[in-house]
Length: 449
Image 1 (tube, rainbow, N blue to C red):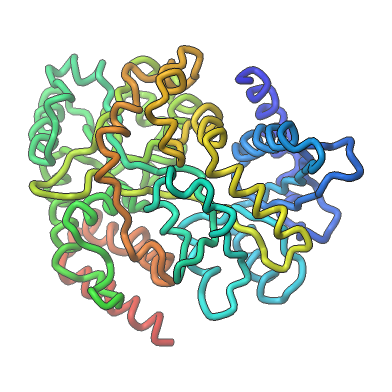
Image 2 (spheres, helix red, strand yellow):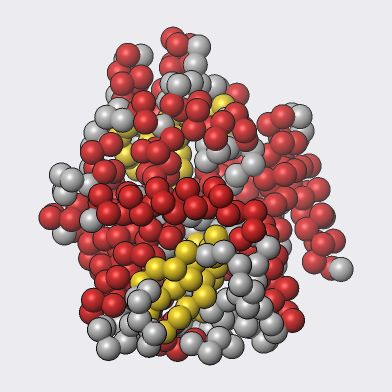
């Protein structure tokens, strides 16, 4: 399976490199360029037009539609996968849903954009609750909640997105640091300062164009970007404490600004691959970035629980994410919904999520399956020098959600912090509370319009 998927993915990425310019201009009802997967030779197969912004997902869907067709020989499916640029896809989707024409049957919507598509009383996405029900007891509820509104599930998650710590044990050992002793942020600060003093190199990542690390700190403070009534409150005490903690870590050289503004970018990959940074606090889905873009670190990376503040209930927060939605006006909506729930939430889907994408599986029944979690042929287990599932099981009961992530405010909150707040505090040295007060005013004015 691994060889098949690797060959398929290489072909998909090569195709994408050639056609991305034209793919980015098509709507589902145009001819356009796409990759067809599934029952390609069957005239009776249900055809699903799918939009995505990530080439890697094509290999995942290829495996899932093959498995579906194997189990449903009288109910075959084939999917036309259109890979569009990130912003282009989300913008086209909004236009298509608003106009009532040109929308796909199914679509991968990134978490920071998702709330834009569930606003108002006339949501154009299908409620997937019925189709998800057979799997619900075994999947991470916090991740389902992110793509839900008013008790309705509008998107099927692609991963758990557990935020963890990736430690380069080779570099740490050379500096006399044992990562297993790092439990709290105080421990992390002490280790980071020591590492910087002894090597002159950076310890952990500070992202100024991503809120992955910061969301974890906010969750550990028991805070959110909203008040108790669900109103915007990005300048509240908990958020201020989280930002002050991040500033303290920065001042102690325990975290440093990553080239490119975030770890999940080409410049960030290069910095880690070169050994310029030693620790990365990011979601586990970074696994596919590690093996593809930071190959020189193979065998040196250990996955561990992220540091915590004292007495916190939050051991991890869901970072990033993609919710696969079904357009409710699609002529194949019912069949598409049944397939998407299977493709994202079933035990087999979780196996493919990990084996193909390196994503922590949505279906937690796989987390305790020794044959699955200790598969010697798994490319991600080959890369790490410990077992990531030991960490997942250790933080499982402390996996939390920021309620703001499910609201209309979240896309704007993310944008405000990633383009204004972090740069003001860490680049310009502005006062934390004043910066948050300005952010609160900006956001309040935006939603008052």
